[in-house]
Each structure stands twice: as structure tokens, then as C-alpha cells.
Length: 504
Image 1 (cartoon, one colour):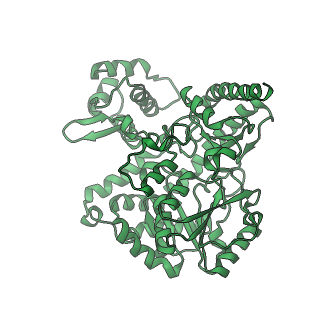
Image 2: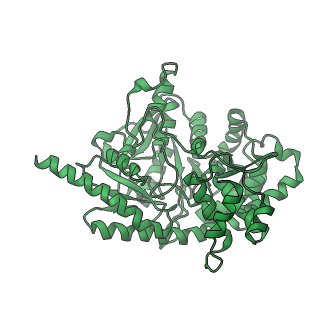
């Protein structure tokens, strides 16, 4: 689509009488053209001034739309070429060599023989999704609602200053202003006991856990991991040589008592406020027992508080770290769910006695940068924009969650259990254990709906309960029902197939 054709197309589709703001319409139409391929990768878009003139709208409206789509990765600026369409194929996550699109293991012969045994094992255990957006991809926030205009204003203020310190390596532990802003936010929002010096800025939860294991555990040390859990945790721990002990979860969270007497771990990695992926909350009794175990055996607890801000109907629960009186909890979080995943900013709250070591270790291992972006995020938090954005998104996600629950009820009534509906960004739909949830996820993707098979989050997928993780955060309310109708057709087909096998 050439520039003139694009302008004509936009003129035809912009509705000047709509309640939807022109900025939102322009953003939506351009995104649609990029994703559909009508605007191929590398296409140069008209300048903001030219497009605004031709459409008869304010230039700031075009600038805002371009900036938002740049944040989403649809567009990018090229020096001397203006704004061009990004290559989405390069940004989309492709299946790792060891897994197919549904997350199932494939022949290791596909993994390069040049890799080490550890590298081959890492890739074989990976389960990266082929899509990172749309119905019903779990764990993905709606980045189209991110306040790009505010972020850009803050960003431009720092960029105009061009302070040398912001263009160099970030100081060990992160920019002091961001550490202070995160500490203040966590004290208020999550009841975390911390001072700025305890906050270590990272690139996300993977790096936070990697750093913690490298500093506190040796290869071969025992690590308790919830079963099921996020597959990336298992991959990270395995690559570091940990002895992973999968511990089942029940209605009260981590249930190590059910495994009988066993040697205590060096580290227990838990998601107590909203277990991933099943959604239960660790009971107070279990929290206290786990902390007592860590104190008695000089172990550590990593608390991954990955999406606790989004709890519906009740206030977010205080974190496990707030109960820790002996400095045995390493608190981990990130801004991927509350802002946008591409930001790649996470944090550790280390116990006071370990804070300096964590800051030095981070600098020694990773040599962090992005100081200017840390400065922008610090202002974003300190000026109240983060809190306002979380409150707004909690309301939007609550409506989408309800729409998905209504769609499930419409198609299946109460014949299939729904788990984890009180918090987070996804639901779990339980399936009959005779259904192959990996094959179902693969067929759903072919039909245009992205879901994740529950069995893939278990240590033993072949014998694990079957189900689907359904993310609702990045699905507009009006798209929930038609998207789930498509998915319901695939589910019914697989359930019927399983029944036929059982009666044959």
C-alpha cells in the first residue's frame, strides 16, 4: 500500500462521528494494516505532518498513534527514512528447537550437535509460544492501553538532557532513583519490608532468579519447585545445575507434607499470592511453616510475585516477604504484566544482609545499561502514573475476565471446572484427562486462537491433569465471545474424539 493509497484508505475508514477518539481509530487501523500485511515490513509511512494535513486532523494525534505503535513494536524510526513498518516476523517468538508449537517434546535430532549437553537440555525443555498476542494468550497484558503519551513525554525530557550518566552502564543494583521509587511502591502496594538499598534492578524474573541461584546455591543443591509451575523456571534452574524437586500444590499452595519426609531444600521457589498456573493462594499456616523451615535449615525462599496487582473483588494480598522476620525471603517481581513485556525491567528485594552482595553480583555478571530508561520509569512511578495505570487496567481486565467466564458458561455450563478466576491475567479450563491438551492447543492455534496446554506446566506431562490456560488481558471484550466460540468448536471436537476412543 503506497502512501497515497494509505491516506485514501484511512479517509474511508475514519469515522468522525464515532465516540471512539480519532487517535484510537488511527492507531487501530494502522495496527490492522500492519498485522494483515497490507503495510509490509519496511514500508515508509507519511510524516506525521503530512498525514495530519491530508487527513485533516491534529499532528499530535498522528504522533501519538505512531508512538504507541512503536511501543507495541509495529513501527520503528530509521534515521533518514522516517517511520517505517517493523518486521513482525522477527519479533514473534518461534518454537524453540526442542518443542513444537503446542509445547510438546520433539526429536532431539533437530537440536544442533554442536551444542553442549546442557545447551541441548535447555532447548529441549523450552516451551516458547509461537504467538505472543491475541485470544487467548496467557500472561500477556494489553499493551495497546499503555499510556504512551505520558511515557514519551518523560522519555523526551531525559533524552533532551543527554546526561552522560544515563548513556553509560547503569550503577550496580540500578539507578538510585528507580530503586527508591520501586521500594516506595512495594511498601504501599504489597506491604514489602524494604529500603531502596535492598532493591536490585534486573531485566526481569528470569535474570532475578538466575542471579539468586548463582549467589546462594551451588550446582547440585536441592531446589523445591511448585508442580505445576511456569516452564521457564524449570529451564533456568536446570541450566544452573540445580537438583529440582517438584512439589505438588493443593488448595493451600505448596504441599511438601504430602511428599512425606524428605531432606529440606537449599531454596524453595514459590508463587504464594497467586500460584502459577492454577491460581490458588498459599494459606497463612503454610507460609509460616515454610518460613520456619527456611530458618531452621538455613535455606532460602524465592517469592515470585508476578501478577499480584490484579486481584478482583478484594484488595491484593500482602506478600510472603512481609512475614519474614529472619531475612530468608528473596522477593522477585517485574513490570512486564503491569506495563509491557518489552520494557524488560524487573527487580529483586534482597534481605538487608545480602543487598550489597546482590548489587555487586549483578554488576559483575550482567553489566547493566538502560540507565535512561530506568530514569524514565522512576519518574513514571514517583509521579503516580504506575498506580493510576494499574487501577485502570484492573477494571478493564475484570470486565474481560467476566466476559470469558460468561462465554465458558454459555458453551459448557458447569461441566468443566474453571480455576484461578479471582486474580491474574488468565483462567484455567480443566478438560477430561482423556483429552490430549497439547494436540488441542495445536489445533486451536491453527484455527486462530492461542492457548497453552496445562499438562506442559507439570514435571511429568504425560500423566498430568489436562486443561487449557486462557489469557483474557489482551482480548477486547467484544472479541471474547466470537474467539471462544471458535475455541469451543475445537474443544468439542477433541472431547468427542476422546469419547469415541473410549467406547471403541
